[in-house]
Length: 202
Image (cartoon, rainbow, N blue to C red; front, side, top):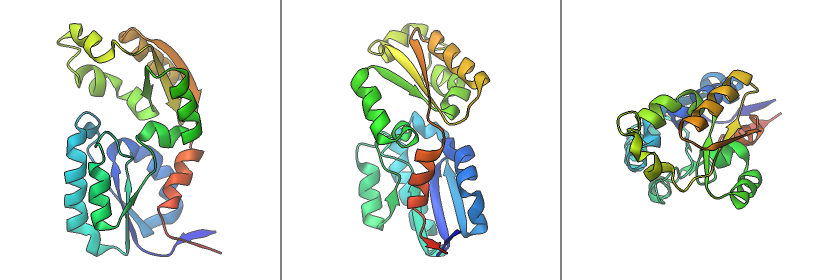
């Protein structure tokens, strides 16, 4: 059995809460998580300074700290913060890549660069995070401004749920895009998270 060798704090995007609870359940209280607002999906400029503040305030409480974010639209600013603190994050440019795995994500992008991606969380909260968050409920004419260069929505699902697929398909229809579904499961994400935790094998 693998067990953490150190007390670990993970600073994480709130949109990953459901999946992280599953992955981290075997580790019990040896791994703690501080979740940052999922609304940072629409405000990526807030990610790096907020992570910096939490690292400054809490790092001394733990033997090891890691970050459950990709770059997530920070344009390298998050990596600059993490380099200064000597902390690692999940690999990739964004959550779509670490959920799908880099190889599958690259093939999807090569096939159609104009793809808008959804995870389970983003599909469930599409109305609030995307439709309302981007003001499309009040200003529907902004649809072409935001999505004029997209041709499809791809759901990268973690769970095998027909209901969730239906929700995602309806989300795609609401912004006038074609819909595709790829069930990617939890394996790529699980491998990425466990890479961040110092483990003892035995």
